[in-house]
Length: 154
Length: 154
DNA sequence: CATATCTCAGACTAACTGAAATAC
DNA sequence: CGTATTTCAGTTCGTCTGAGATAT
Image 1: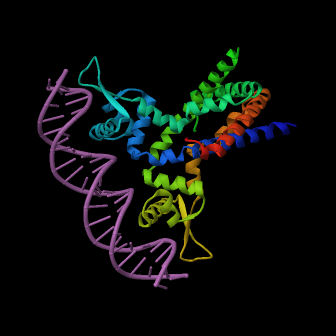
Image 2: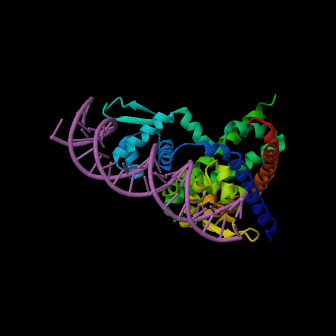
Image 3: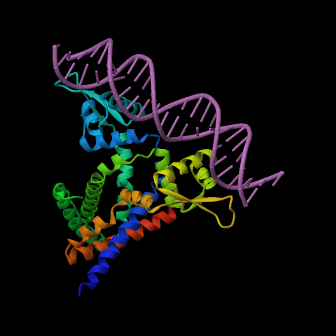
């Protein structure tokens, strides 16, 4: 019993692996050109995840000094990936946030929506509907785990 | 006409985006701990994509000198992500290849199969079948583009 | 002798720190 | 005056290059 079930799980697993690999390999040439250090990349991710934040917050998240955090943000700004803006309340505070260019860069890690849209266009109605149903179910499972993750080991 | 169709495309797009984002955020803490420079990471990707290769090949792919390439591979070896092995034919040649640890590191960028398996287990038969059908269709579209990509701009 | 790799010396840059300077 | 950020030495490490050594 449940033999078919297991086969299908394996098939999906293999499919996802192949898709990820193919889409990631197509991103490889692009990845090679990125001229950011790991520290700068980490800062970029932090800013993307936590939204606009001050230098102090960046320093805390990265567990580095404020001086260094300021320096890192500075490099991102010079590279055009981030921007500074004064906080309306406290003008001492500088909130750093990603520019569109910075967000685009992260999209490349995540998957290009435009290319994806092109792929979807080429699927027939039936397959698309199936994919939609399947992903909806999958997304809800993933998000449940995301919420419950704090209680687990990981 | 085709109004439903477009809605479904958007829904899938949004679903994929959410899933990617959630799964990538769960990888964030892990990413922070990686103590590799971009140059080393590039070398890791090159080795993963091109399989076992010599120092000269690595140098070519990365467009750097052989001295630097040897140095980079050396760091990966010391970090436990790569190994050296003599070529049986030419003992001058050293073929570098990733260790399991190195491949595991890349899997973290790609998506953890074990976690994914857990997610799939929690889906009901109907949803899983739909996901399977949809991904199959999607994968074939992606792979077609992958093969035809050389003739396009990118 | 040619090829493939390693070793060495040296230049350059980025990351990081701590302390002092500046703005609110 | 305290908080937030920048500026300023100064240390450390990684990247890269080119020349020369070594092995096949």
